[in-house]
Image 1 (cartoon, rainbow, N blue to C red):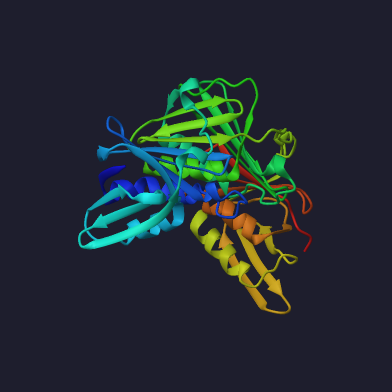
Image 2 (cartoon, one colour):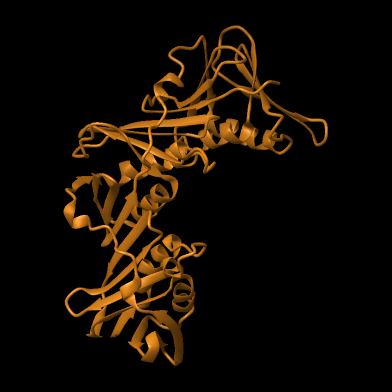
Length: 366
């Protein structure tokens, strides 16, 4: 194998491979990236952890076709620190690779490509073209509330539902829930929702952020595929049933307060400084006002009063400030609506004027 490739182009593929390669696996090959050079297609860079797989087609001048696997992290670090704009790779004896850039020469030990796991074949799937920005927004506003407890695997991902014209994404960790509904013209038509795992949905977002135009999406059980900017990602879906999220979202509320987003977010962050996992932040609603109080006998107290559009009975309710602040942070509207009922009832946080996105937060005793 012998080729030359632009450093920025090479790093585009290696950055994705490095984030997916599994260095903690008992299978050493899963920590590697596959490099396959062909005279007609350039350089293909692949990586997999058996659940998430990436294949990036990169432009390269191939003199001698061939394939090899190399440690993904070492390869990325070496190329990132090479001088100049072009890197030359050449195969050496015993599965070694020699890389040159400017006056620098580096040799890395590799492994034969025959032992690299098979990447799911996206050519067998039927793709539809969807809006990259819409899909990226939906992921961004649900990824943060995915459950990280590996024993609750049915919550370790984002539920994706689509009817071909509109789509819904939902995530929850049992303490808070995020749901977003957006028009997604031309999207896949699914008879039931699928659960895309946390790592896979995060890699989807990474690819979408770098994509210059529309992306292609396919759900072909047991995989979700996404193609954008010459990169194809295959994510193995979670084979489980997502809980009935509609039952978690309160059907009605008795109290509604509208608050400017930035002052509320800043206030929650300050209250979080003196809170703990067992002591939440207290929100006190009264006519025209929302008071935010963080109180911890071991650390101190923060109290702040914000102007709010609210007319109704006084209410004091406690929340985990981290959960509340993360929801507010993912709202882009200038004003936030708090839908509340009683001190022990879940609260709903939503953008003012946008019925397609909301978050639910379970209360804490104060």
